[in-house]
Length: 233
Image (tube, rainbow, N blue to C red; front, side, top):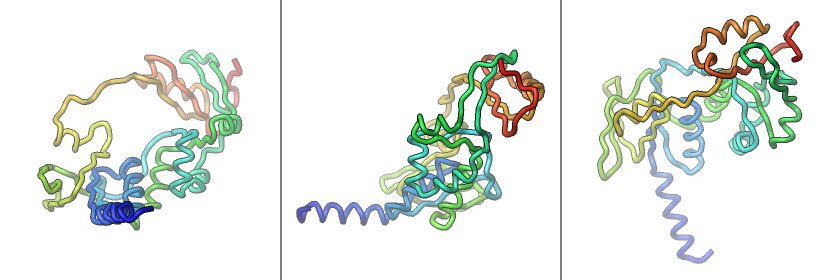
């Protein structure tokens, strides 16, 4: 590496160490971002409207690149320890017809990694990872944001103000930050299918009947335990 490259690298490192980022939302996106910002020496302030940390969310699956990413973040074992003890996943139509089955072990090998657990489990693992390395303020939210040449200033619902170099909205599909900065009209209904976790087929179908999105198409039933009487076809 020549002298000019070393100087450029040193300046970039200095800028990163002085960088301050305000993040709205202590969900998966906000917590994961805090980890990577800390890796480059930046300071992160996370603003979360919930009064305390609350890990929320139903079942999700990490596959391939997702598993590789949690490995790089150092939380692979924490995620694997929270994985659901499911050997096989079966998918049914609304009428109970079996569409297909997948063995967890086979998926893990085929996809280059597979972890089935709750979104709440991933959020909890990320929170444990960054709670000592980022400033997380619970019980408040951003009510105003003003951009200028020097960065951004936000006003919080508790009356305080905070300045930073960057503002990141990691507060979900109903993002308050997006509305404050860009206005409304960005939400778009994409449809999809719903996952039902239940201990018997009748219970699962009963839940699905009460969910509008499930009535529009296919549901997926993920039993945590073996379900007696679950049809094979």
